[in-house]
Every structure is written in C-alpha cells, then in structure tokens.
Image (cartoon, rainbow, N blue to C red):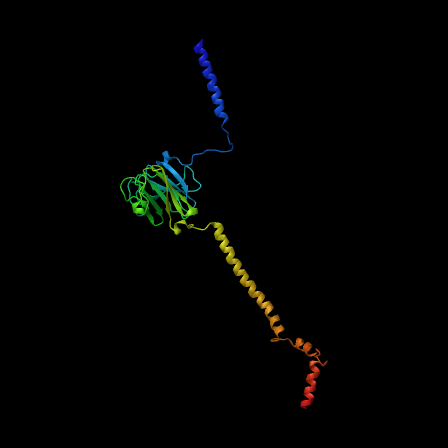
Length: 269
C-alpha cells in the first residue's frame, strides 16, 4: 500500500513538473523550417554558411572536405555549388585559391570587401582568401599551441578558437577559447573598404551626372536668351528705335538730344 502511494505521488509530481516547464515556453507562430542544403545528397558537411558582400552568393564551408563553396541566392536542394577554395586534400598550403589546402576549419568570417578569414585550429593559423589567392596573416609558423602575441610569424593560438570581423574597428576578433582570451588583429584599411557599390549607388551616380549635364545645357540656353538684353542695356548693341527714343529724351537744360545735334550742325554751317 505504501509503495502504491509512493508511485502515485511520483506521477503527480512528474505531471506538475511537466506543466511548469511547458508553461515557460512561448510559441511565436508564423515561422516555417525548410531544408535548402542536403549534405548527404551533396556529399559534404555544410558546417558554416555566410553571405559574401558585394555579390548574391553564399559561402559554404565543407568541414569534412576542407573546401569552400559558393552558391547563388536563392538556394534550394537543386542549387549549383561551385568550388571556391581548397582542393579537397587536408593540409596547409597557401597560393592560388583552387590549389590551396586547409585542415578541417570550422570557423570563418567575411569582410566588407568579400575577403574570407579562416580560423585554422588544426594548423594554428588565421588564413585569408582574397581574389589574389590564399595567404596566412597570423600564426602557422610556430609548432604547437600557445598564447603569444606580436607579429604574424610569432603569434600562437590554442587548439580551439574562432574568428569574427568587426568593421567598426577594422579588425578581426579571435575568441581563443582554449586560452580564455579574446585576441585582436588590426586589418589594413583596404581590407575594410566596400568591394562594390550597390545598385542604388550606381543609379545615384547616373542621376547626378544627368543632373549636371542638364544644368549645363540649361545654363547655355539661358545665356543665349539673356545675353542680347544685357548688351542692349550696356549700349553696345542698340536697336534704331531705342536710339531714337534716347535722342528724344531732354537733357538737364531742357533740350533734347535732337535739338543739340541740329544746333551743332547750324554752327558748323
């Protein structure tokens, strides 16, 4: 009898606890989950996905293959994946993007220009993928792990770190989990410049150019219209009727210009 009472109390406690947990959850309705990349079908492990500024592409990191792919938006399970960097062989090799080698990276970030910065934990390095190829910007020169700061060739990291780009300070922040540190790598100013102008920016430039051309043409037309009146006002080009009107005007003595002219002609005679 006591055992049955104990079981009953346990069931009641479990039900009360379940209701308490569910009461703390608030469902925000109206969202839907769909699968757009199937790694089993594509035979890759999409460990991380980020947009690339200045283009309509997404960058997909395949962790198992140590390869970076690009895919155009919008994406679906039928989208075409293009190999962007890495030759599919695990290693540590800089150079051309297609022939470079990585060692199963898990973290990367992208700057405003479209450069990709890779946290290579297994190689202890920070790599950069740009239009000119793959280079190492920090670490990778010293064997083993550590927390050494300084120039790129002297820097060391733990075996667990991630990288993020902060445009406000033009720098990379390294979350060095193994060392419980946050490290910073200052980037070059050109690395923080925007890669390409948006469509709105391009349209704005054309509108500004057309506005300047229209202003110039309007200024020329107004100049041709106003210029004869200005010359008439200065007396350089006066019409015959205007000269006659001016001759008929009296001067300070009460005589008109025509009277003065006739008096001078009589004297000369």
